[in-house]
Image 1 (spheres, rainbow, N blue to C red):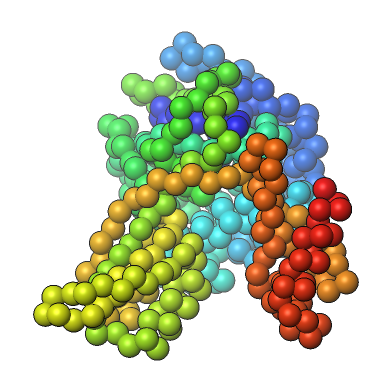
Image 2: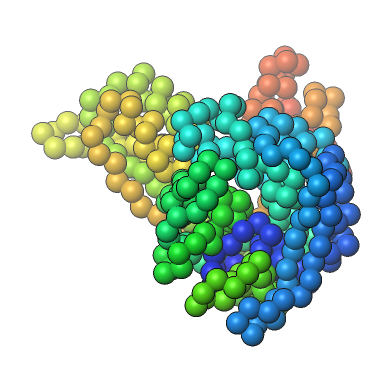
Length: 387
């Protein structure tokens, strides 16, 4: 499996992330061709060689001409959706921008739909975020990993005035992730850089791999005792398994009715939980109870805890990190007489595993007046013919 490991020497920004990929072999002309599929103009892309602390690196820069300085999330999502980029690239880019919107909204006391991006709404930020996702795709990266995030300290000037370092939006984005503070009194991890890495990468669970290529992305200037560089390793693991880390939240419930538990589970799934399950237990004072277990992405821990606490059933939640293995998977759309049915595909050795999406199969069965198995096995039969 081909992986990318970003080694945080001195923070990161969107342009530095792309620069590290260019230095590791990403074809600049192919990157430009893909970015030209975005329905935006008024910019020019530039790459050049640079050195930081006598280490050779690459630079990437977006020279912009537009005078517009802000956009909201819906406008940015429309730009991405109208592009000719691959669906998986669109999906990841939109997810990064949504996380940025959530961070900005919380910081400024607004909603995700009303908050306006400033620095991250301009053309260069759209290019940086989409370019990072495109670059990983062009390099054939299957999994992304990152070291602890490094941040500076002090104050920085923004369009909103003087702000602390890390910037408030960056502070929201890195919550729940491993962070190391440097003595550098300037911003070295930007909101855009933090959003890209915390959305796409796994932290502190790097599998054993053989680095084949090393690239260095350089920041715009020298900034003190640390080289202003982001190091990227690209290599192969010896396993077909994808390894990542997720959060497990658990609490014991002994005063919650079955109806309340069902309602709570619905709310947790709606908030983005990966899985929610109940385990019967015998508690103190001989009370029967349940363990509520919630699996979620690390960045969603606080959101899940808020849903559980607001349910009124507990005063405490246990937190832990879980390492897991997954098979790399892709999605294929089967166009059947019952409609389009998404199917997850995973390869393990010579075997192909199929997982039709339950909701779509159930919806098609109800609409056609068929039972679930009829639709399910017809989709599998058609899939086998196409593979």
